[in-house]
Length: 518
Image (cartoon, rainbow, N blue to C red; front, side, top):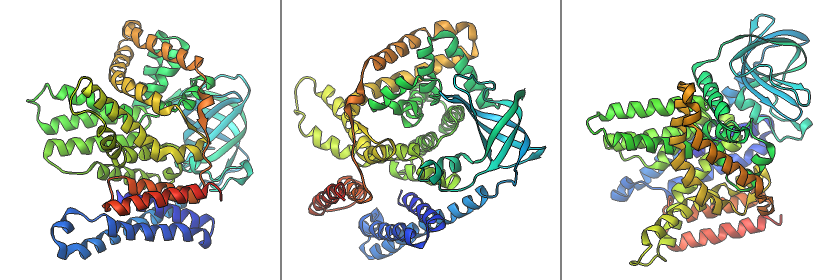
């Protein structure tokens, strides 16, 4: 886990050095060195505890490993930037053929993301963004369609975007969007080249569309695939203000529920070899991840689930934080710009909070539960749900405030009820949707109850006004340092004595509070 954090800091250092100069890069460089020293001093392994003579060797090894991660992250970003900035030299009116990766209708027109791009018959690396401005217009091409058109093409591989008031173009870098099109003419579909995952996603959406109301279809598509393009803006905002829009970001909630469903099936098949169980689980999770587009949150959840299952089957002792670190390192290696993506930060931040803070919160709350008496089991279940929600919220709070400008004051309450319901219902919903997609005549019967539940949920969030519970916290850089310093001291992943831990928490909160006034 420490190396994954070091890789992220190294990427940040490379970004500052490449685009903002040496002075801007000084802060992440200092942060990397301080983090490496902290890892060496406060996170000694079991080997150092058992063999005191090796203590300094373990410290030096950890310091060196974190430094290697830091410079690996910096180097990875430089290579990634060099590849991204090598866009084809195109200008003027160009004949374009491409494959539609994403098609999204908005209030101002239709947004297309195109891949496998060819300019005047010459293949080019990278993707093309095309916005056809026409209010109320409908999609001409769906995902997987081959399209052709004439347009004025320009390459844009800059990192900064001051013209549009954006701090950076990390979204475009992460999605490999290198070209923009204007003055589009003669846009038409010339064929279909949808891949397996795209075809399956479209079949799921088609089955939902035929058997559910428009609201239930949009909500079901978002829950199953993470695609919120069909959702009404008012409904989506209501989920966001309620702090539960994460149920649409396919992540550990969905993958974990599917994984638990598979484990329940495997528990009845004891004769099946462990390797076969692992391969089946890997295949099912990877297939579902492909349907959802293999986002950072999906990749993280799949890696963690498969690492956990491998340890369970074959007697490993890997820590959950280590599995999360492996997942984070893999995502950053493939796409260094992912660390600037809100989904990446929220996904890994939530898991970090659950792993480090939730056990502490659970122990503190469990101390108030009577040793005997009725309802003790229910209280323990409630404590577990509250602890998970609090731990995830605590770590992601600054990210939500920085990215969205607010945090929901009712998210804890809603998550305690909605997350367990979604976790329990999701595998069944996915299985029924798969049946409906495979056998269209059964779609109406298979999805009857899910469509009723989705319609009821959409009605509830349409009627509720959660915007009144939005709370703003103006987190500055100083506040972030203090806040996460306090979280680090409060968690159980750092070896600190009681006095140092308490002092660290109060010092971090003091710095955080002071940062609000700077």
